[in-house]
Length: 382
Image (cartoon, rainbow, N blue to C red; front, side, top):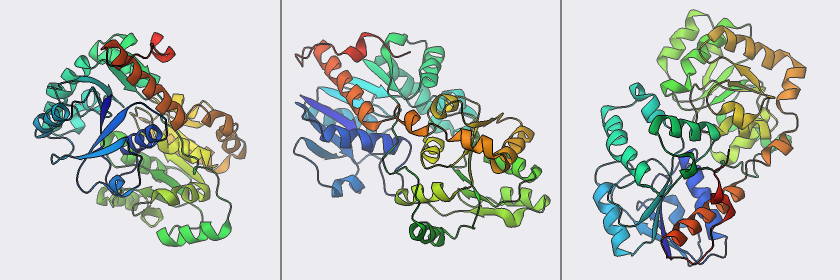
């Protein structure tokens, strides 16, 4: 039985979000004693081709880049030529004319819910291709109950077709206490002795401008480190409050350094207004960092109710949350209390096992596999 998985979004320096999810899925499937043959669709420069993989993992070079019209023709041709039984589109990118069974992972619906933040091309792609593929898919996987409800509400799909498989937290995300390692990482990124950290891109729904506005209005005088490209508008805003010297823009933080960065952070803040999952604040908590997060979308579901929450649309509320996060020791302690128990819900191994069950069920329903219907698909998660 042949299963194809699109992994073209995995590129050097992109191992987070969807790319991280796909990499962990492939790595987990490779570790299983499976009857399946996996055909992994990648571009020629994919970094995962450099790793050693078992014989049932085969890489297929796709010329089309991730997200474009060319993939609509090239991918179906590859699936047909390799006699693929099931295609897994682990993001919103999928071919309308798939010649085989298909499942998709829809991480969020921000392209539909927040179309004003995307180019006309992306809006068209989502309306024409993605919505059609979602409805044609045998199953839809998603990463939170929030996203599941969004898919049902926005696209009118049956809940029975949609399954929640949470993202995981890697084992590397634990508190780093080695002083030499912490200082080594601090020197690489030129971080101040104490700082508040936000790891995010600067798309509008990530709410970074609102964060800087709140920071400038607050009584907090610790530096604010933004792991985003330098933004002159943010610096101009901070300058008007005489806080420009306290705003740091970090270069890209390598994943192997993130646990140390999270561990040395006085406070981690994530003010996003819309997240299908939101992995950075959970990773930060697992490294012992108190977190301020927006009370919005999936974030309360992911971080739990112990975090310090703020209204992402109210900069004064965010400012107050920052002050609590820096100065209130009891609130800081509650933010990371029982984190080891909480993180058990978010395991890449659990995600892989649940996904494998769906593969088996999907193929069994088409007569390709003789496996019985697994327990996961007898009823969708709540």
